[in-house]
Length: 160
Image (cartoon, rainbow, N blue to C red; front, side, top):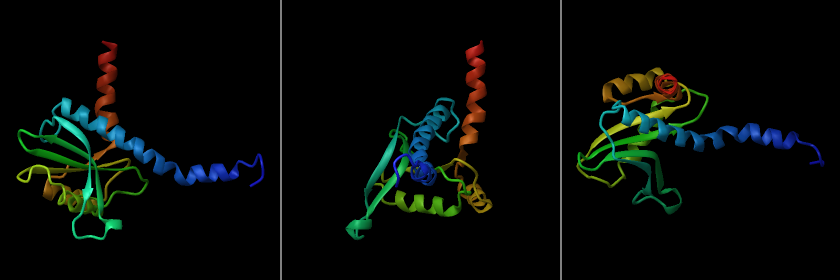
C-alpha cells in the first residue's frame, strides 16, 4: 500500500461496515424493547434486560459457546423474551428463529418459564418466518417499527 492511497481503507470500511453497525443495532434494539415495555406493547412487562451467554454441554470446547443478544425477564412471573438482533440487508429467514430456540434450550434461568421470542431486524422477514410467527406467536420487530411507532410520539410530546 502506497502512502496516501486510501483505497484499501475505503474498501475495508465498505466490507466491514455492517459488522460494526451490528453491535450498535443491538443497543438500539435494547432501547426499542425498553420503549415497548414502558408503553405496554410486549406480551409482558419485564424488569430487566441484558445479554445471555453460556456453554453447551457435550459439545467440543471450541464450538460450545452460545450467546443470545437480548433477554428480557420478569422474575416474579417467570416470563422471558429472547431476542436475536440482525443488521443485514437480506430478509431474515426462519433459520434465525430456529437457531435462537436452539440456544434458548441451554439457558438455565427459570426452568419452569413462559418463553417468548422476537427476532429484531434492520429490514424485513421472509414469508416463511411470518407464517411461523403466526403459528408460534413470535413477535417480529424491525427498525421501522421502532421509528414509526415512537418517533411521532416523541416529537408530539416535545412540541406540547
